[in-house]
Figure 1 (cartoon, rainbow, N blue to C red):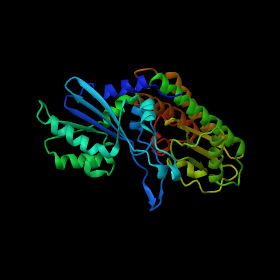
Figure 2 (figure 1 turned 180 degrees about the vertical axis):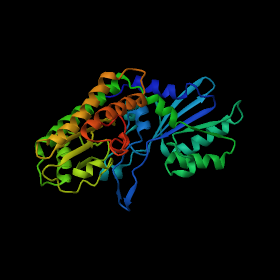
Figure 3 (figure 1 turned 180 degrees about the horizontal axis):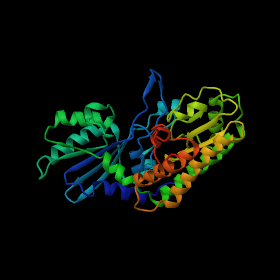
Figure 4 (figure 1 turned 90 degrees about the vertical axis):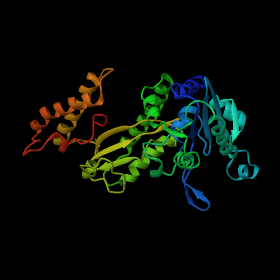
Length: 350
């Protein structure tokens, strides 16, 4: 189950729909950072590049050009290298890259600098300002060292009259509402995660280390053929569960502890993100049960109340009002305490 080539073309067309020509958008797939002279971290493709191409390979560049009323697409890939193929596997060939992405024109990355220079030189004589669109991740060019930031800096140095357009916000807004194919892929990620969480429930015992329980999640995903994680797993027992992003996962789980997990798998880079809390010994104390049920009731309230057009802020305000009503019944919110002393995330994590 993948996003179709037609949907990918629609996304690429929408990216340039409101842009004034001459315009060139440059989107990088990224590269894995090095760990040593002969090692690298695992590669994680730039998600916006993947969203436009369905391709999960490093050192590729998607180029979208607008000249007049004409929009063209080019995908720059690494050339095949026989020696490299023997050591770490072959690179994606032009025909495969075109079939997966729906981009018809395939070129090699070594030719991109000259192609960009040619485009800028040819367009400078046209009406309008030449603009280079880049995904700058909320930062300015001097605050990051991604390929996009490096290119922005070089363009500003070499072509002072060329404008830089940050596409980050457009990607964010364009991806807020998911297509049906995206929803189906997210459901697959959620189902894989559900199965793995249930495996954790079966595996947990007082006395084990948090990392062993987190490992049970990894193993359950691997049994389903899944190796990707949406983010670093949080497996926090006892008081450590009050730290929102506790990631060490290296302490002993004690009898009577509640364990908070916050984790998820990926499917084609669509992510699940699920939080659950459960007792290490399989049984809640009465106090734990009372608190758990208040949180569960808040979750049920939001599920029943959520409607299209509502904002997360509105839903979060409902939760805060609910907790202000219910927590004093459990002896909380005393001596000037507020809901925010106990609930300092937001409605998306209950």
